[in-house]
Length: 214
Image 1 (cartoon, rainbow, N blue to C red):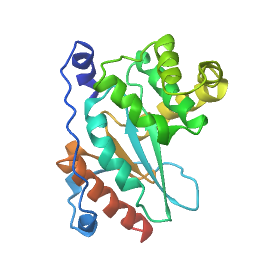
Image 2 (image 1 turned 135 degrees about the vertical axis):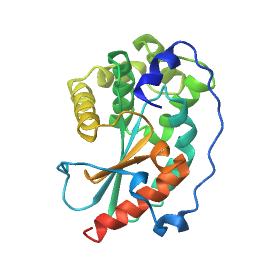
Image 3 (image 1 turned 60 degrees about the vertical axis):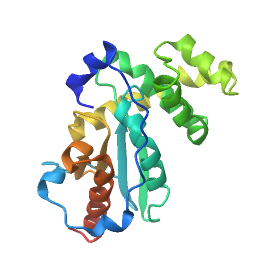
């Protein structure tokens, strides 16, 4: 979903709930084209030790919702030398509440439990979850103490992580989601690669390129 598409989304664009098929990971070593990804002109600083893979997403994006099952299955099978993490975007200031929602869930160790349920609530149950009171009602419904959640949700730590996420989005020059960043050097997406599933194939090939020092 491109930045320019978010206004249409807010105007009431209809959403589908189609789930993507799990990609054939054996294709990961397939030949990829330069047009399948973008190489950053200035590599970003990354932590030493593992190859970093980032997913840039927004909870309100229907394409991110459709991509999530495939991505989740894929990231769980990544080799031990790869570190995967999600990065929520805020292309508009009003989207920053979803950044804080994700980082609060993450801080409470509930990504596995609640991450997909947030997507489900927005895209299937038609809950906007764009106000604090709606988010607190959502987490309470899903067995989380709303008082404790609010403490985390409004914390300095979560606010800081949201700001860091925005800086990372800008550094990668991400202009649409979902997108995958690879070790501060490359990014790919369904639009670049031809489909979301093929973006995972391209990402694996780029991970292998980093691993080999390419």
